[in-house]
Length: 138
Image (cartoon, rainbow, N blue to C red):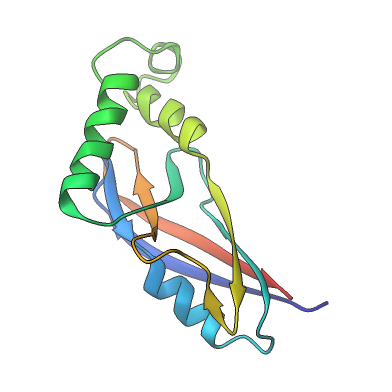
């Protein structure tokens, strides 16, 4: 079994900033020396997340609204009381969404569905320089 790892960097705006990273993942997988396996997409840190969704403005707005209803920015978080940085909501959102995703690939193509994209979500309360780690095994 072979393993290939790559770091990717993305600038984000925070506050549920959603980025379609499918082309980055597809490019990584396309260049691998093996054609079948799985790729892990990992977001180091505790205020970002990665998932799949249809990357369409209405669905993205619905997702942002859902996070706001489920984990609102406006309530008090113990994290904020301890650290005073006001981003307790972003840590909880990241824990629910998760910071990694595994996607199988076949013939050097991710096996996402027709209307399914891989997205990075920055939940933090400020812009960030996000590092992503792609690791493929096959």
